[in-house]
Picture 1 (cartoon, rainbow, N blue to C red):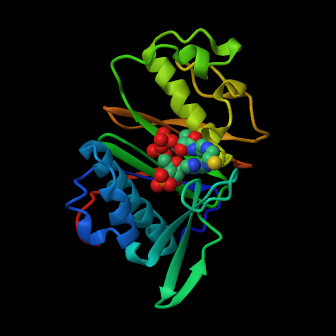
Picture 2 (picture 1 turned 120 degrees about the horizontal axis):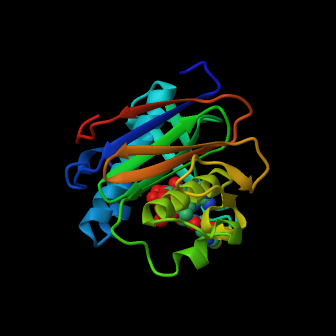
Amino acid sequence: MSDDALTVEVHWARTVSADVLADVLTRAERERTATVQNAESRNALASSLVLARTAVGAWVGVDADAVELRRRCPRCGSRVHGRPSASWRSVPDDVHWTPVPHVSLARTAGTVVVATTLAGEVGIDVERRIERMFVGFDDVVLAAAEARAVDDEARLRTWVRKEAVLKAIGRGLDVDPRTLVLGPGDEPPRIERGPVGPWHLQDLDPTGGAIGALAVGADGPVSVRVTQVQLTGRY
Ligand SMILES: CC(C)(COP(=O)(O)OP(=O)(O)OC[C@H]1O[C@@H](n2cnc3c(N)ncnc32)[C@H](O)[C@@H]1OP(=O)(O)O)[C@@H](O)C(=O)NCCC(=O)NCCS
């Protein structure tokens, strides 16, 4: 396990087919994945779940099959959706909750990302670059002070930055993204108005086809290490 409290490990992978991952998905993950009709989304889901367990396992020092992902919604208490956490099994039948690392994950067509850290609450997001942002984006997402997004690339950047921060506070889009004021998407990220910090907010572009952002509630300098993982059907 890393000793550096302010290290953030970002693992990313290109998605692979859910069929290829069938043997490394848990039964619950297989059942969930099977409900997704769209193949790209199904592959992204399966890949993100395997990558998340792989990333937590790498931090803790165990295989991915000894890691269990959990969720809890701060709004309704559901354990089916919401902020992720992880537990790991050091020996069979003995499940220890890991108080750390904090974990966050995101998926988009073609790319999945996971952040793990001891530094503080963490949120990560990734989106595939798109040709055109949806009509009405500025009204739904941008605060009045931000309503000068220069182009769709800047809009998408603002979007992933906001999602990362809102995931880090455990709320996601339960919070109106217009209440979070960031700098313009074509400038280095900063939080002008939002949850009480300090925050480390940075852009992450794992591949040419996807852009992302990472937010960490960290009181001190953060060192981010980015590692590409090749997902396969074996641990
Ligand atoms: C967080 C959220 C923005 C992510 O949406 P998305 O773009 O479709 O998906 P991403 O690939 O970026 O991220 C998915 C991951 O976000 C994480 N996530 C979900 N809710 C979260 C929350 N409240 N806080 C932090 N992370 C959250 C989960 O790890 C999820 O993975 P999972 O589906 O395997 O559990 C969206 O799910 C959301 O806004 N959820 C909260 C909405 C809410 O609270 N509704 C009230 C329900 S009672």
